Image: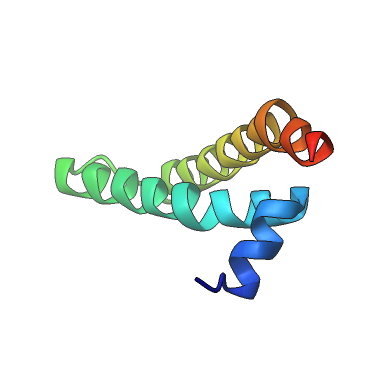
Length: 78
């Protein structure tokens, strides 16, 4: 089975991890939170920017944590 270039890059580099977590986690969670605030009627421009920034920061922290604790030791172990 062939792996795509994106998956290979994302699984072997820190910047790939960050990009993957932003796409797979940060964007969907930000869209969901903005939608939920919009349906509640509590969404403002400032609050939307806060949500986007928080989701971006959280996904970067998660990517770095996964990279250092799981991926890097596995790559070095091979």
